[in-house]
Amino acid sequence: MKRQIIAISILLAAGMTILSGCGASNTDTKETYEIGEAGTWTDGTYTETAKGKNGSFDVTVVIENGTISSVTVGDNKETPDRGGIAIDQLPGQIVEEQSYEADVVSGATVTSNGIKDAVARCLEKASQ
Image (tube, rainbow, N blue to C red; front, side, top):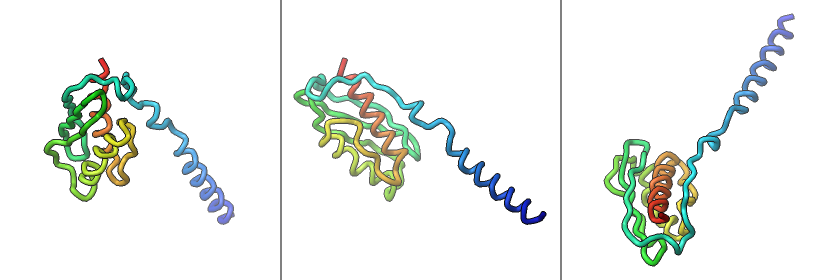
């Protein structure tokens, strides 16, 4: 009897674990942007605020000849060994790919997504 109770408990725990992964995903709340194609963006300097792990910071996108020529991140409080890596790597990837949809930096998802969102909003402005 005791073995049956233990077996049932284990099965219930396993079932609960499996079902806990069946909830709604974060993709349901993914932001949508109205951004034109690279090469069509209006030249200028655009700045938006990003939400990082340790607070907000400015992200500036410069558009020249309709394309992204630079992405810079302003003063921030992100940890150098996590968010700092995203701040160092992601702007260059965005310029190279001419898209805010560059891959997030592992271990710095919040900072990466903050930068990408701010760049997307800058590109929306440049698309109007």
